[in-house]
Image (cartoon, rainbow, N blue to C red; front, side):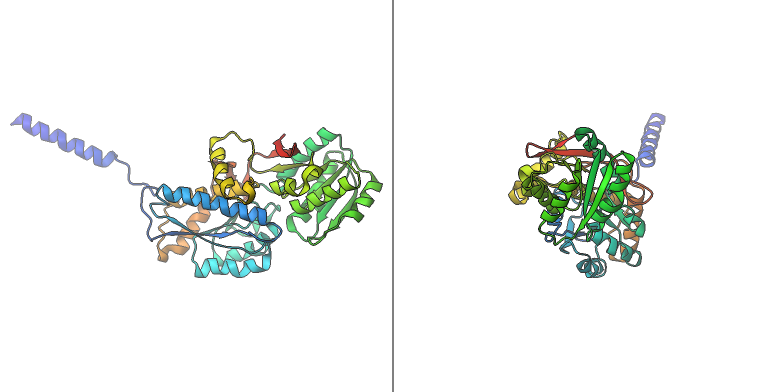
Length: 392
């Protein structure tokens, strides 16, 4: 009888220990409410930055499909609600209102273009909805709202190593700058960042030229640049203008090597510029072509199967892909419920999750948010060689 009592006492103690020592279900293990988890998107698949917007949309869709196939977020599939604003700020204003109030998304992935972000980021203070850009790079924009984040690297962080290696490669002692005065990030690159970096690295700035998005011909610019005879040409613009400037330089027989800002290191530069952009230097916030990371290899296979012409994406593609996975991680770790009554609380939880994000290992690299809500991490310098971007 004593032995039987001892046996049951041991069983009861063991059962008690199992109950006490078993960890409580984590937020990740708990199922969210609702039929879908709504994530918004602003992807400009038309306009001057269409290559970036299209790449971001495709990349986000790939991430959503992968996550949904694996069970969704907290057991609930993602529904992506997105709009095209044509790389312009004015259409983005009603879109952000619609995403917040009518679509009731929890968070927005995008936009890309800094001129768009600059206009809509301040509106987040009233809407109280988190937004994460995947390629806006004008310095200072995330400070416009505590709800605004950018999983990218600002132009100042990207350009300095490119300037250093460009100078070393070609022995640059003097240069001119051309920049698009209608584009926010291009203006900052050409008017503020490049001149400071040139002075720091002992490069004489011979002259600064401005042009507009609609500028088609660069012959007059190049004629004057030839007369100045600089060692190099630096361009603050998106890839279309950068390629056209390189084509005009080749046409006029001027061989000064070129350096481009954050929007130049895309497949579109090579597609438009061809041989004229050989030797063109720039930088990127994600190593894509030639990256041996098996995750990047797998992502690229899926991406090129969907992209127009099977092209590789600019760095905004992998950053957009990572954004969706980071959102998943934050929602599960911060205990988002996805209940309609908790929409405001859930959005704030996501905001706080991005605020403290540290060392997320994604395909674009390791993502950490700084005190301003901008990403920090490594920069890859690229140069066009043999019709491809090569890491330097």
